Length: 385
Image (cartoon, rainbow, N blue to C red; front, side, top):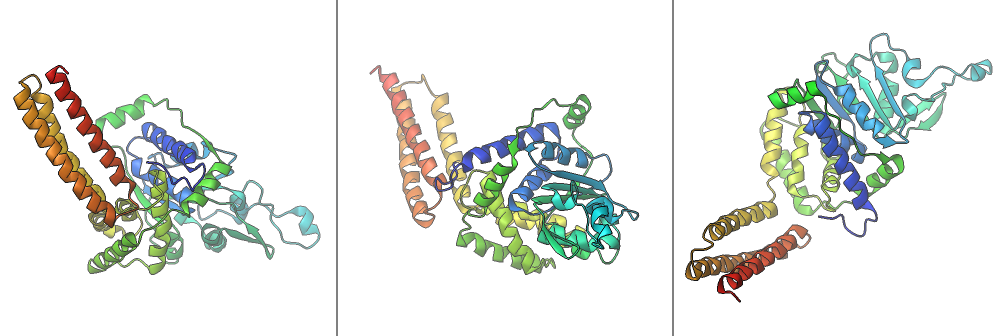
């Protein structure tokens, strides 16, 4: 399914990002959700948090992604109580200091990064916390009263544990997507990790990523999706889960990014699944939030088409299994199949009138016509015509 033609070159960028996602999944086992989340974070200019023990390939994953973005300035640092502002924001300029100007040289530091990874982010001290917050949220850094507009596309934070100290709530809230990263559990994954996967990861350049971000902002969010989000909000509140209205508003960019990554120019209900990693407030709410997101992500159009496909698959498998049993048997089965196809086509027309922007409906109509023609060809072969 293609991005709308009114969005020039979007498909080629989308294909590159999808190829990058596929390659990363082959290289980093059991990290599919986090990989998708980091890519969606870059596309939507949101930040991602990875929670997990040391040795779960968090930094290796971010490093691999950064190397796949040509021309991107990447900044990585391990934070601690002794971390100084110079380490993150750059040393004071001695030349400016001689003139009484308290200004930092930010070259190759966080304020000038396109993608950043801060490990043990909740161990940062108060001396750098406020400056870090403005970069993470507003993408600006105040340098001697002047303002540096940071090119930061996304910041990925990592921690071995959830923040326990007071005063870190604002920092924790800056991460729109949050994933728990555990050790590998599957045998094949573990062996694959030990063997090492020689995977070539496709690349894109910074200009292409910036273009993708602008396309993402144009992705349509249908009113029915917004109405479903309201239902999600009510269900979450019934479970005592109360994300802020701001968080719901920011989640829209994630949905747009998800639609883009899947090659669509409009959000569908299925995209809501990603919000299971965005709308919880406390760690104990993660599972319930994911369940609610999945429950409301059951897209009515895709559900109906999937049901039709299951019915047709059963009919077609029956036809295939009966080939060679005579024209009368085949004729009856094909007549039954064509009758079902005609019935489904009528239901698809009604579905199209209710969801005029859903290209999946037209795609499936074409698929049914192809099936009908294939059945006609089977009959002709059977009669020797």
